[in-house]
Length: 283
Ligand SMILES: C[S@@+](CC[C@H](N)C(=O)[O-])C[C@H]1O[C@@H](n2cnc3c(N)ncnc32)[C@H](O)[C@@H]1O
Image: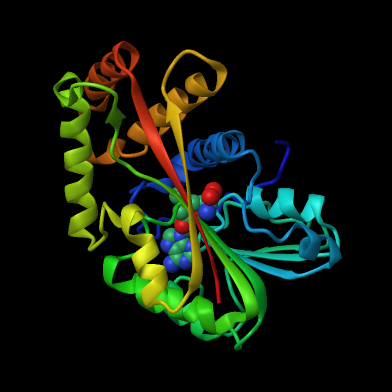
């Protein structure tokens, strides 16, 4: 992408990498592929009905923005709006690419963003944003933190503000007999255990409408899309993304190459797919 990324990519306990410093480019590429897949599946990089507002100029927040690709593309498309992306790792470009896009690892200079998302959000004044976008944070946020985080999101949203959450179910799905993908199921079972050890709910993706309700949001809309790991263009990219995701857990599985070979065979020979969920709601 020709962007300058920080070399200081410190290990701060993100589950995907024990030693993330060595794997910065892999993670950036994985996030880029994920971004491309959802764009193709949903037909756009956002679903909230805010195009006119974005054209006029609104304030948008993306917590856990990763490589910043969503904020950057949105900032380019909507020059009148301001996009604030925060991530505890500075894997985003460190120089200012668009004057309306602010990618940071701190809310302000008095706070270390590293603490946790709730404390970070507490530093943001009421009614600061028109639109909050959060994507692929299901493997980051602990189960008992979701309601609190969503309540904070509601507080910092302006009246009539929108929230949008996008995730995919980490479980592999198959049309047909699940026994045909027993190795995939076993691997996902191990990932579920890893997540549970960190108090992360592997099924949270299916429960976000309930969480949004409890968080006080209204008018919840769920959009679902499916991506098959087949041989068409998107299927091939999705297969590659799945490979990157499997290898992102390599530090936990010394036999990752063997595991991957078995999983790949199952994915090639069966109608395996990933299920994506997009939630939109209003304050
Ligand atoms: C799977 S990535 C998703 C990135 C991005 N939202 C996207 O869609 O490409 C999860 C991100 O959450 C970030 N993260 C983890 N803990 C965080 C925290 N406490 N505060 C902010 N970001 C955090 C990680 O650094 C990582 O970039």
